[in-house]
Length: 274
Image: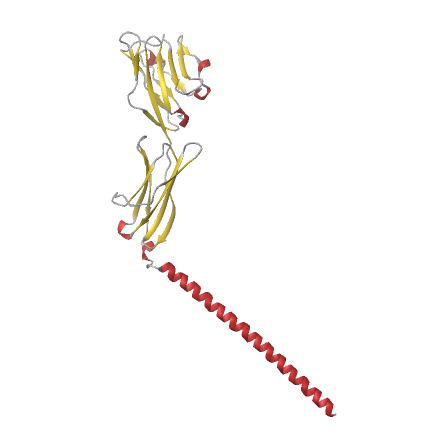
């Protein structure tokens, strides 16, 4: 958007948003058209919704630091050399997520223009879980710390989309999103699987690859049930053996007591006859 104030001279910005990632050094474009020396003029850069609203002020041949918002101290500047040629673009260092929004470039008595800054945050996805399943292998992929919110896709070795479960999204108090998704991979999908996280607004994507060895697919169907059956069978045998041992011990003890009682009776009978 450009508003004209002074004759045919106007400020020209960009009709497309400026896109940056957190930590980038960027330039917000703003030019006088036709070109003219702007070093002796006042140039104001402000941001919508910011208080104090000034991110940079050039006045009387120098920067007016006293008006600058503290969050932009040491991060904004103009090129003195370019000012002489009508280039009043703002240099912004170490972009923060809070910088996103609409900036206003204004030269009093001439023109103003608005520039939209889109800031993105990205992170690499990670395979956090690999589990055998009846139909193959179930994978879980997660990527934490995205802005704006991205989408998560699963692809096979040929780049074909795989049918996966719904993407779960958690948004933190810092506005950053964590996305995760599960997919069950069958042998026919090939062994190379890709988890891709992408954000079209900032034109960014990150992906991770995993190779699934054939061993994960060799387990026969129902193998988990078979293993469980074996465990139950072994435990049952151990319990039976324990019961047999306890009964044998009790029988042995009873037999010993009976033998002791018979000996005592024979002694008493002998004494009675003496």
